[in-house]
Image (cartoon, rainbow, N blue to C red; front, side):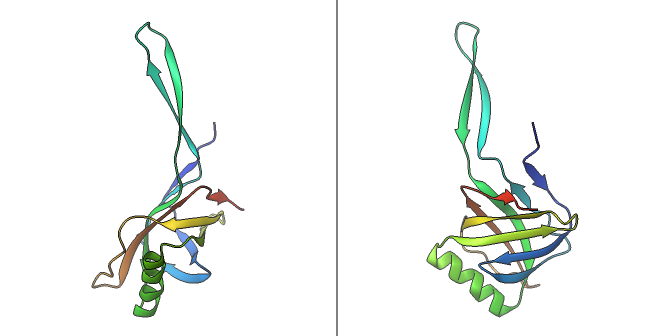
Length: 128
């Protein structure tokens, strides 16, 4: 079975709603492309049932470096709660993309101009 959870790696390009953002050098997001989790659950008679649970795909813990204008654009996405196109290109030239919704509370801009964001949706696929 293929590993559908990708962790870390240098990011070359991040686009959210068509707008380019700069990932920080320390950015090591979790990229999830699997739509289902499977769990084995024992029963009272010694058998085991496999349970399939649907889960969201997307990207979490994505750290971006941004100016005030970029932060305002990201904040508008959270305020609207709208689905946006997210694409991420890693240093190994793999590209992931999909229509995702912002997850969690609206991000806060840190004193050093960094923001950590997460997006989830039904599909976030490896495009290239």
